[in-house]
Amino acid sequence: MASFDVITDSTSDLTFDIRQQYSIDYLKIDFTDGNKDYAASLDWDQIGAHDFYESMRKGVRYKTYHVSEKKYDSLFRSHLSAGKDILFLSCSSALTNSVKTSYGVRDQLKKEFPDRKIICIDSLNSGMSLGTMAIDVAKMRDQGKSIEECEEWIENNKLFYNSCITVDTLTYLKDAGRVTGSSAFFGNLFAVKPILISDIKGQNLAVTKAKGRRSSISAMADRVAEYIVEPDKQTIWIGHADCFFDADELEMELRKKIPKSDIKKYVMGAIVGLSAGPGTLVVNYKGRSKSEQM
Image (cartoon, rainbow, N blue to C red):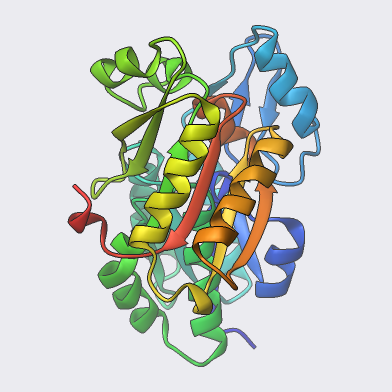
């Protein structure tokens, strides 16, 4: 029996099969189009991925809701009531204030469940970098590591979980407050595609630019090849916001530059996708510390 439960949130982009395989639960973050509210299911229960991104292309703008204390309480309580300790991995605090809410709920529930352990970690990541972190913790748990050992390991290693991103336009990130205005300016110049990383604070940082889509894909592959560590011992995850052919091209570029690598692709979930916009590509991998890339 698992010694504790691993929980993350909708930004982790973990598929149903992965969540089942590693026994990982997640908090569904709510979002709205202004007329209808949705719970961001990683299984796309309420709206299909293509329909979601196509609606954005047609002008629909989605916004997230702040995650309520009630929602955290309900999820955490269900695990605590089953006699399980909790290790919760949240989306980066630079991208959402919700992790702070989890701290408050944690402190209240500790009074009600004094014999249970509740650990909430600011991952400083999102997407499959956060998802991979949850998988690694689940593996460590299943190998017999204690919740405290897993917490210490994550705190010491979370800067090694890397994301390299390109977007069709920085407008979505700018509107969502996920990137600086100056970066948004150069990203919207004609045919210029920005290359961004998740920095040491868990924020999106524009580090370079490329002329055109193909050049941006090549630049992403070059950057990953430069900073990846032990590629033969990990899975490289390519996420895309409804741009399958571009994701295939990115995979081919990565395979040229990182031979014999294990590469898997997935469609970015709604919460990450509504902030980045359709046409976004991201590579999630373990590499050199983000502190070396600033």
